Image (cartoon, rainbow over all chains, first blue to last red; front, top):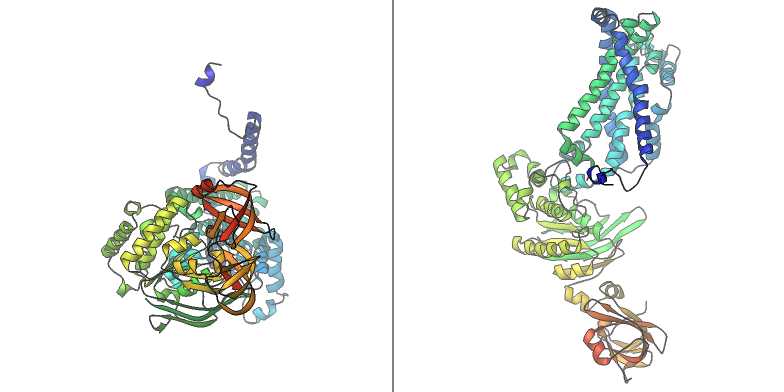
Length: 288
Length: 352
């Protein structure tokens, strides 16, 4: 009795029993450990299984380097495209009323609900040698399938919803009032966009870009269909990993895979760092 | 600035928000747009600000037609109902916004902007809050920052949408007085929207009472309260007893009694509705030639006075009367008693 004052039991008004709390925490931590952390660690363990020399050798292999270059190149085009398009779509949906708005909202989600392999096939059907547009384009010397253009198109398609999805709820919640205030204070449309609309969604936008980028670099299914797997030419990092793995070059496969995993980790770290550094502004941007 | 609106109409889809508004606002005036929700008062304010554009009508600021002038060029200070402060900017940045977005050649130097901001923050008594974010302020403080931000552009007219709507009673009263003082000191022309009749009567020089997209009456608080032009205005500005009556000459016949009417005079007999404010009813024990027979059904303290529910013995209708505690004590009125109600001030309108 007497030591209850010395060592008070932390209780809350909702009164969940301790065993429930322990169970919930253990389940989530266990699940994350088993499903996320363990595989992530195993990537690095496998990659470094034979030491650092084979690891770096696998990365500076010409085919690997060209895969890395291509992956960066595709992402560098796909992400800005989706940035512009996602902003336009989110702005249109959140701030205006127009006919067919609900159809647009549904369509934005389409790439999420369609298997990436099918997304790739759609492009083959459209632009392939026997596709709808393929022969016409071929006539003008434009090739899409089995080229970098095909990779870029497929990646844009698959990663399209990330930025728009991140922005729509945010912009809808914020409404038009701040923009109206800016205009009534004498700001032009562009000034309003730059100084009010954009900063208000900056965090959502950044998060959307990071997710979009991570997916753009990691995309396998759709890219696999349109790429043709030409080594040193149309092979992106995920495709290169698959080829190496199928050739029993485990160190090589995991070395390249570790770069992709590293990219994901860097993404998370950058996001946390920014949140920590600009926490004030972030809080101001989300709550109101 | 003098503002003239003539025959302004505005439709949203099938909904007619404004049905022909004529209004004159003189320089230095403090005008209240008073009405229930859906009466079009906020739409009218937005039309003035250039945030909505009327379908028809003319809008003149100081003699020049501003109908096609954008909100940006009108130089109207607008204080939004929920303040609409820029959430990612500090208080000082919010206030500076209107100055910073000016074209380069009209923009003052950084030092001047900063001086101007401090001056405005001092004006709204928040000089120590420049580095805070809007989320870190209370409702009343946000309201004042919204006002400082609007004043930063040196507006020709200040528009306020339900400026005290989201504040608690005490803060509201203080801010009201402060705003009125600010208006007078700065020589502003101000228009504010409210659904609170007490607020409108206390604060404004002129009150425009709106209903269903029309202005029912415009006048000084005294005029609209004591001489309501329509039944709507009468009922909107405080409690009112409605009694069916017959109007003839400058008298009305209610039940068996005939009493003088203050606002109308007819040459022939017409059916009408008489309105009596609760404090314009006197209660007696003895019936007279001009009293209605009633029974006291309910009685309770309502702030400084006593509110009584009286059941008319001639029609079974109910009357609400407000008496002072003193009157109730002196007359020794009690629930269940029969009494005689005298209508001391009656207004009437023809039945529509």
